[in-house]
Length: 354
Image (cartoon, rainbow, N blue to C red; front, side, top):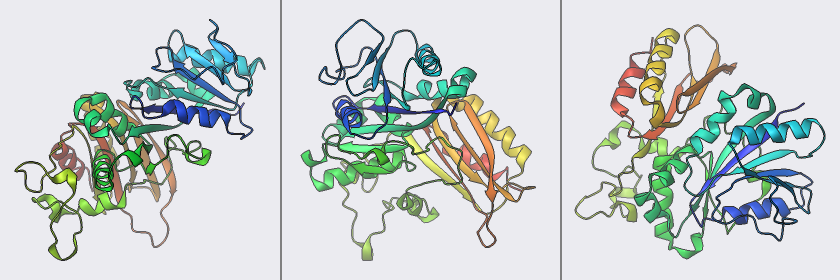
């Protein structure tokens, strides 16, 4: 049986997760979707889609989709669904797991990797994070959970952007890109997202594509580490990003989020044994604070790209395609985590090069 794709939907309270889910469920796309909700969801999917409010764990919806509340743990719920699908008792094509407003998506994502039975039935596709533009600044300042959700995302949807000014929106996008340069950001009108932007994003596939916001890479050039804000300002115009306008901080960001990202790039090859030891040690120590990390690497001894990625302590790698003939063999890695020691990591990686 083909693996069942799973999507994790996370996001701030009031950011429009339920609206997005409703849209996905009611759009006539010929797919049957199983929604798994944490039982203490702030607002459950309304009864206009549900057939009836019953004590059953799994409810059939009028459009043939199913909705399921987590009674024990996610693993049991997923196993129940997979078993019923195998027996032909339930018919669904994919699963969407809606986490509550403050949940950490990390353990949910890990379930798909750690558990062999789950891995035999399901394929984790991606983590989608909805950010409410109106309340984002406050929520990101106050709640680490909100910052974590941004760090985990494969795709960020910004809702309620019409309620803020253009400079406020740009400042938010700039801030989110610093926390997570991997995740494309899309401004959406309350829940209006086409399914192509929600499903089959392959965020967890070990593929040879490493999407990092190109502007972020520009900012990472070495000459930027002074007080200059790192944007390419024409002819020395001053930097007036609202996010930089801290009291007396000059050009420094006045939010210094604990969820940050950094990129390592090198055109030298890695020594496989050294890199493996170093990454193993780092993950051992900092794993709980490492949200997502991914790399496309040039390794000594193989003509193929090596792709690695991880969530918290779980790390996997795979051989990718052969480097193209005139393609520069550049290793690129991105790390997203909470207060990770950037210098230790960057120096350590340097020392693993041939």
